Amino acid sequence: MKIGSYSVSEYVRRVESFHGNVAPGMLIGGIMVDAALERLNPTQLYDAICETHSCLPDAIQLLTPCTVGNGWLHIVDLGRFALTLYEKASGKGVRVFLSMDKTAQWPEVRNWYLKLKPKKEQDPEALRDQILKAGVTLCGFQDVEVLPGFLTKQGKGAIARCPVCGETYPKNHGPVCRGCTDESPYASIGQVSMIR
Amino acid sequence: MKIGSYSVSEYVRRVESFHGNVAPGMLIGGIMVDAALERLNPTQLYDAICETHSCLPDAIQLLTPCTVGNGWLHIVDLGRFALTLYEKASGKGVRVFLSMDKTAQWPEVRNWYLKLKPKKEQDPEALRDQILKAGVTLCGFQDVEVLPGFLTKQGKGAIARCPVCGETYPKNHGPVCRGCTDESPYASIGQVSMIR
Image (spheres, rainbow over the protein chains, first blue to last red):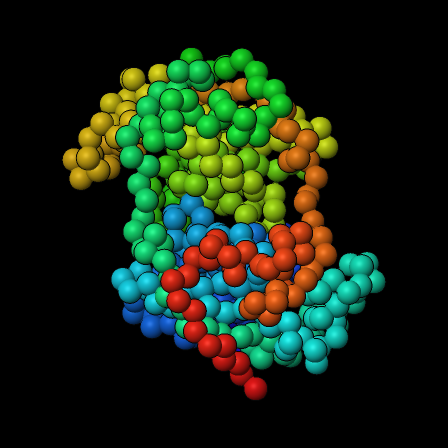
């Protein structure tokens, strides 16, 4: 069995190093990404959409050229454990999701996916075994076409200096940067220091 | 010179492999993450906030344990080239930003950062040299405290089955999943196929 170009044990090693632990979502996620890659024309440039923040974006980042920081991985938080790989030219692609119905034969997968048991009562060994045994049969597939907004990279546009904090920001965000509005994630922010 | 635990050339190699190309934002981003790590108590568990989608999240993912998929990297799109590493226990941390004022002495950095020249007229070699020479002197630092919402992991809560698509989603999203509302990124979506 391969996950992307890796053996399962090599993939697990890479997951440990990047994601920190071999979460069930990283195992089934790797299998899902692998299945999407198999169904995509590999000669085409492609982007990814990930429908959840949990685990799956890391499987995509490990197994494809698409990352959050290079703009080829788009996280659209729909709360579904699903991903799409699509051709940049046509917008056509394949969506892979983890099927609730298909977990029926795999009790530990079902317990984990539907949260039927608290985490500490789940059996991580059995869960891992079932994910690897069930593999791609847990997945559903759909041909999709993405909206046009996902086909062109949105540039930042002109740069402005925020009159409040003095930092640069995209002018089209408004008269001040978002960091100086109630979108700020900070309760307090101190004086600026610099190395001279 | 080190970037995280890597030599510059080793970091560059890892950037090529993960991000696809050694973008200027990945170089200065690496230096910024390194500077934040130096100012943080390394015995504490920490999370990251990244204030932009461009490049910087990948520098954080390469140099810290924080990734999008493990939930330790929070991208808050404020459009500022800045990041914060903060202790999970106290919410206190250090914010590092790329200073507009400090780019004044480094014309190629300024051209790139403020988009004063179209990309094809920029000199990538000179830009890279200037970033490596200027290094951490391009950065500003601030002590910050993050809002309480960034201190606890938000669970998904109870899982429901969407009455439209039949997939699982967090019940607190509403009566149907977001994928079956106008938040869907798809123009068209085909029949489900499965492997039996």
